[in-house]
Every structure is written in C-alpha cells, then in structure tokens.
Figure (tube, rainbow, N blue to C red):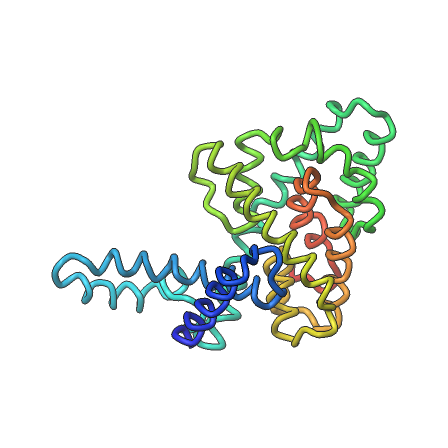
Length: 266
C-alpha cells in the first residue's frame, strides 16, 4: 500500500511538473493524497535516520513494536489500533480546547467595535453552555480574525502553542516557526476545502468523509456518516466564505465547530 502511494504521488508530481500545475490547482483527491503522503514520508525518514548506526535496526524494530502510534504510519495499524489511536490523538487536541476558548474571552475587551464585542461575548457564552454555533454567528466575527486582536499575525506565542496542539502540530518551536506552520497548514486545508466544494461532498466515500472531518477537528470515528457529511457541509460553507487574510478564523474553527457538535464523545 505504501509503495502504491509512492508511485501515485510520483505520477501526480510528474504531471504537475510537465503541465506547470500548482498544488492548489490539483483535484481534491490528488491534493489530499500528496498531503498525507508527505506526512507518511516524514515518519519513514525519521525511522530511517534511527536505523543508520550499526545494529540500530534491531532497536528500531523493538521501538516500532512498543510505540506503533508514534512511529508507524496508518498502513501498519490494525483496524482496532486505527480507532484507538485516533481517539488518543483527539483526546490530546481536546486538551487545548478550553485554553483556546479562554483566549477568545480574554480578547473581548480588546475589540474596539461594540457590535463585534457583543457577538464575541455571545459566541463564547454559547460555547460554554454546550451549544453548537451557527455559521452566521461565526462569520459575523470575521473582521476580528483578519486584523487585531485575532489575526494570524497578531496571535501570541501561547495562543499559537494551544492552536498547534489542536491541529496535532508540535508546539515546541519558536514563535516564528509556529506561526509559519499554522499558516501553511491552514492554507492547505483552505485549498483542500475549495477543491472539495468543487468536487462535492456527495462524491466522497464514507471513509473519505470521516478522514476529512477528522483532519478538520471532529472526532468522526464514533459519529454516523450522515452527521459527518452534515458537519463537513457546514465547514465548507464557512471555509469557502473566507479570504486568505481571514484564515485565523478557519484555524479557530477546528475548535468552534467541533467542540459541541451532536454525537461528539465527551
């Protein structure tokens, strides 16, 4: 399966080079394949580096057996491990949700416009009560996330660390690299969203729908397919309404849209 993925990725890259196609111009499935393959290759390279010293390959086999979640890609997980490991990863990113909501509450006094300040207060109150927010409630705050106080370039180091954990990215980097990784990761998701909207959610298989939801913050392993499709439709409606300068709002939606969704495991 990994070898087949590598050959497919090579075909896509060759086609991009021959026809001068950029990443965002690819089809949804091609974009998603390259995104996932890059992550898989990074894990494989790490194992390869560990295997370089003499006789280290014996230690690597032991480490792979003891730590399959951290060291092996999903092709080598059993069906039960796939569910268990995805639950573990989601539990890790859920730990950052209260911190992110707390930061949203803290910036309310910094919002100069009284109307936007009221909308932010209402949104935070709904989130605390366990209410799933409506798309128009979130879009009403897009101005707050394009400039101060919540624009991508205005986020503080602690905010970026919490958001990195919510995106399953390492938070143990300098602020400059944290901001770059969050921007890059969010931009890729935004490009995927545009390609998916063009393809149509109805064209996705059940597994593709669940994988797309999980990437965007929803623990879809325990949610029915139809609910996943509904949630993904809400996400696309919001994402495709945003401009590049408003991607901080898309980043925060990993928490805003997933934390209180019906069927989400507490």
